[in-house]
Image (cartoon, rainbow, N blue to C red; front, side, top):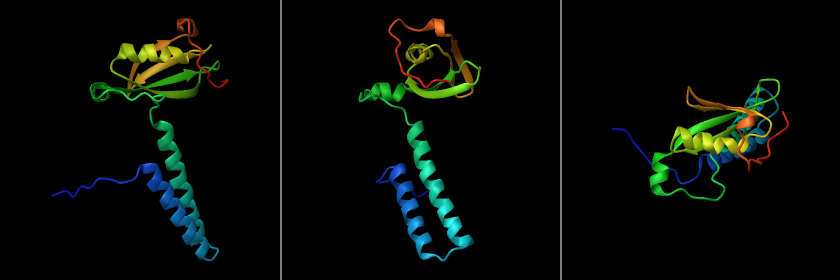
Amino acid sequence: MRRRFKQTSTLEQRLLEQAERLRQRAQATPPGVEREGLLRRARQAETASRVNDWLRPRNCGRQPSAEQQFNMVGYRAFIIGEDGHICDARVIEAASDEAAVKAARRFINRHGIEIWQLGRKVAILDADDAAPSAAATLPAC
């Protein structure tokens, strides 16, 4: 039988706590291979915490209803730079392909966008496809 338990802290908190413990152990360890290994593991835990935070969808303060939350699907909007390479990516939670395309239009700002859901390309939007009020700030690519 599989043992299950509910985490009382977030993944980010646990990773940062682990990084702090590893740094404390490294301070108490004499310089050498073991100490460098502990510091490397601490940096990896901190990086994992940041990556997990970057991948978390942002709701801009709005909480979806229980029904919306159950039906949401994760999409990625890849912003394509002038050189044809991906220069930024955004996570979109949407109930359908059409809703994901509509949400991605706000990211168009003289850049093309490819919308993907897992390994499936949903749509390609050109800079001309921008909604009239699309004014999202994107990094210069």
